[in-house]
Amino acid sequence: MNPRDEKVSAQNIDLTDAYAVKTPEDSRRLYAAWANSYNKTFIEANKYVYPHRVAELFAENVPDSGFEDVIDIGCGTGAVGSYLAKLRPEFSIDGYDISHEMLTQARLIRRADNSPIYRYLKEVDVTGELPNQTYSAMISAGTFTHGHLGPETLLRMLTLVRASGWFVIGINAEHYKAHGFAETIQTAIFAEIISEPEVHVVDIYEPTSPHYGDKANICIFRRRKPVN
Image 1 (cartoon, one colour):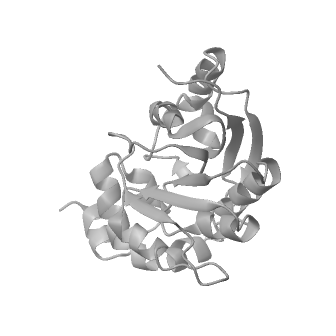
Image 2 (cartoon, rainbow, N blue to C red):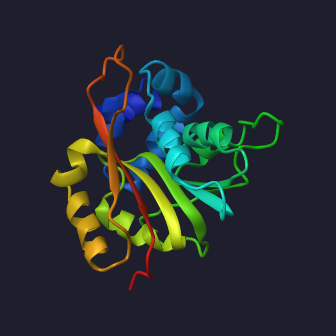
Image 3 (cartoon, helix red, strand yellow):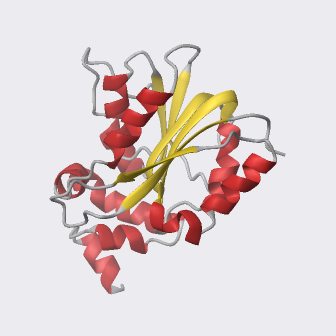
C-alpha cells in the first residue's frame, strides 16, 4: 500500500488527494472513503462556493420555460443540485457520479417540500459508455479539473443534451487552455455542434479559504446539432 492509499483508508483526506487521482478506480477509492465526511471536511472546511456559483449562473441564464429535466454530471453529494433546486424548484434534476457512496449521500438531501432533490441518481463512469438518455440541460461543477474528466469526455457528453438544450459547465481555469478544453470547445463551435460559449471566471473558494485564488471558467452554451 502506498502512502496515499494509507491516507485514504484512514480518511485523513484533503484536496491534494483529489488532485492526485488518475484513473476511474482512483476516484472510486477516494470518494468511497470521503463520502460520509465530504460536506463537512471539504465543502464547509474549505468554504467551497463553486457549486453555488454554477447554480446561480444557471438560474440567471437558462430560461424558465421549455424545460423537462437537467442532468448534473459528477453530482457527488448533491451540492450543485441542492442549490439549483432552491433557485429553480420547477426543474427535475438527475445526477450521475462514479461513486456509489457519494450518490448515497446525495439521496439523503431534500427540497423544501421534503421531496428528494434528485429525481434519479445513477452510478456512471462517463469516460466509458454513456446512458441512453437525453436532457434539456446539463450542469456540472468540480468535475472537469485536476485528475478527473478531460476535454475528450466533455465532447462525448454533448450527446446527453437535446438540440437547443443548455450547458452550464465549470472547468478549472488552470486546465482550460493547458489541458485542451479551449481547443476542444473551439472545435465543437467550428463544427456547429454548440454555440459560442459565454465564459464567466469565478472563484472556487471564499476569500477566507486556504485555497482562495483558485479559479474556474463557467461556460454557458447551447447544443446545435448531433455529434458525429
